[in-house]
Image (cartoon, rainbow, N blue to C red; front, side, top):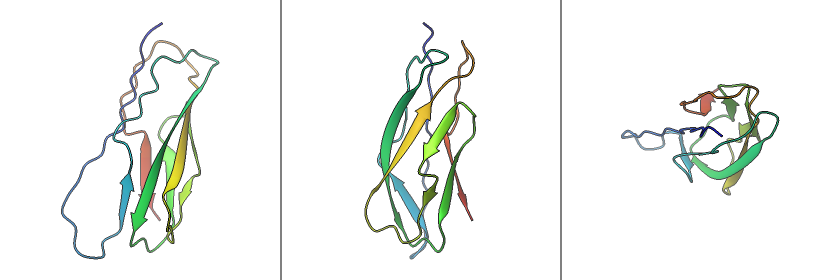
Length: 104
């Protein structure tokens, strides 16, 4: 089959004290080759500091689903995030920041 690369991109910048921050245990989620009609799931963990509100997690592409869809503002323990890739088409290359974090 055709290899499919999914790139999860993170970046950083200096923050002032008490800025809201979400830390991820991974930089990339590589699902490899997944056939149409099949699925593969990968997980990672997030921790957070100084969140004033819950943070929604969404996928930019309908072939991906994310659970849970919310990082709670009061997160005190690492939270597992599971991403499922179930391609609805064949032979495409997808390079994107898979998890789009939006502060409410």
